Amino acid sequence: METVHKIGRRKTAVARIYLSEGKGNITVNKKDYKNYFTTPTLQYKVQQPLMLTENLEAYDIKVNVFGGGVTGQAEAIRLAITRALVAINEEHKAVLKPEGLLTRDPRMVERKKFGQKKARKKFQFSKR
Image 1 (cartoon, one colour):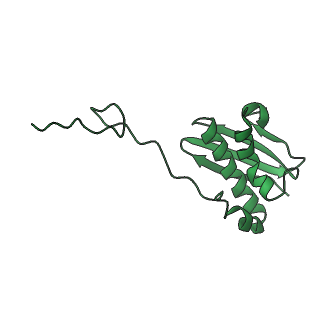
Image 2 (tube, rainbow, N blue to C red; image 1 turned 30 degrees about the vertical axis):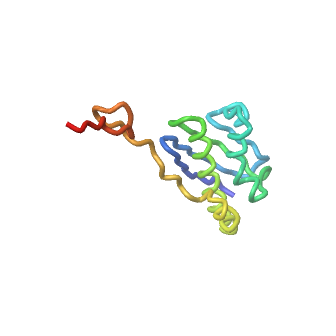
Image 3 (cartoon, rainbow, N blue to C red; image 1 turned 60 degrees about the vertical axis):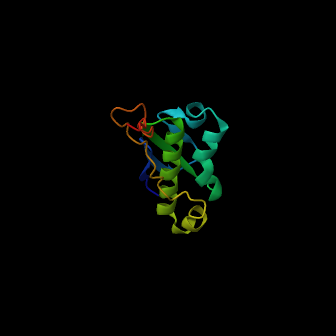
């Protein structure tokens, strides 16, 4: 099996992954993913598609990720891994789709409006 290259995005984070057969090593920006993502929640998000398809120790994954915060990066990696697993084996789609892992979350931060403090603050109401 050759290396599978996929891209995942979330908010402003972009993750490029290179998935190949191996022992289950996940490397994020040349660090082990457990050192890059310190909280168990983020580590679970990265592993989730591999756990659902029972491939935790079947593939080595190299990740280049940039932009956004740590949560956005973890979810971008999750999307990229999911897309790669479906590219390798179409049967994984039946397991991953109901969990919502194949859907790109389209929500982005709303821009700040001029003359306002934040994006969603209303203008000061004045009767006259």
